[in-house]
Length: 393
Image 1 (cartoon, rainbow, N blue to C red):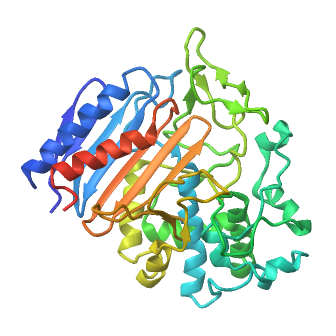
Image 2 (spheres, rainbow, N blue to C red):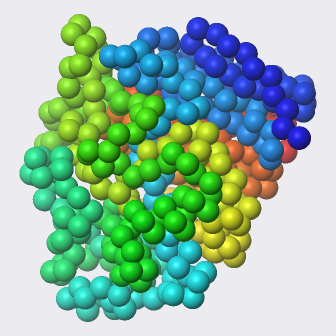
């Protein structure tokens, strides 16, 4: 039975599974203290959830979702989860595999009429594991195009692509447009629009009532805006110069809004277009591991270490020791620590993290609407707290 105690304060609403274990209470207090040091009332902030099996250890919101309205962040606040969206696209592909409608070793050319013969060698598995060798040749020097580019526009260059980085499966390069190729495959095989397929076979199966794909005209209740300051973040031009720092929405505030209309590639879906909350993300992670969305055999494939990330010459993203990429997930296999299945997500001022430790049933989720803090330092501190308090056992 889930056990929790509710405490409320000016900057935090926290739900703590106290009756389950004194260690849970201590861990919750330490995580809360850590978060309070980073995120303050009246500023953009973050939501955090820590759970173990059926117990919710921490469920907290810090700061505001919107500096104009002052609406506070809580577990129902909707954040753009950015690249964490990739695992949902993978779930769509694997659900088709579960139904016998495709195989992960199918070539992309089995479904899409791209001209280059290289597509006969590139498998769906390569797209899902960032090992395809496909380059990102989108017109990134055209800022106005990037601000409003859709999924189909983002992959238009694929049809005539002739230059590839490496042979499929040989290396890791983190690239977003290949997930829009997966979107095209889902539509081709299912006969449904991507959003409709994902709603029916992914979101609904997980019981997600509010998680949705962003569209410019769509109203998303409890939606957070994202922010950055002039002291960090900001878009870089090709000379490495910071050229864009967001839009002023409150005169005199150091916080500049940086989401759709201010940040590029916000309207693409398959690679990073989902809005969700920490509550629904926890529900998603639990449903996924219970086999309610895809088969447990399919999830085991997604969680398997297919592509070595550490030491890649082609990509810096999450290029850390003992790190691999599965299908839509990073895998941290640090010796002496439980295996961690995770993904990060960055878009405009949004900065996100969702991790599962399958061996001990622990989930950690941090969604933030500001990008001026060191996410990896924060989540490693949370990991250390959970280790020291025995939560990861």
